[in-house]
Length: 81
Image 1 (spheres, rainbow, N blue to C red):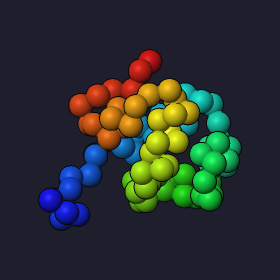
Image 2: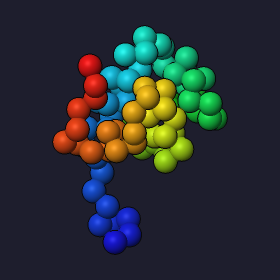
Image 3: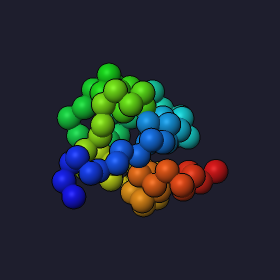
């Protein structure tokens, strides 16, 4: 299906924000923990939905929480407590 048929996960921004909150880190620290070239403003953009993370960044978020990327992109699955 290509880009046009791809549906964006609506809950992704809230999940990325929640991961940062669960880890108890600032946006700047989260940017460092992702181990990619992003700034705290980019991390903020992920949490607000203004920017969409690429696959590598999604993988890094998932690994930091110890979950699969499915959990992040499937709107029907909640983050673990």
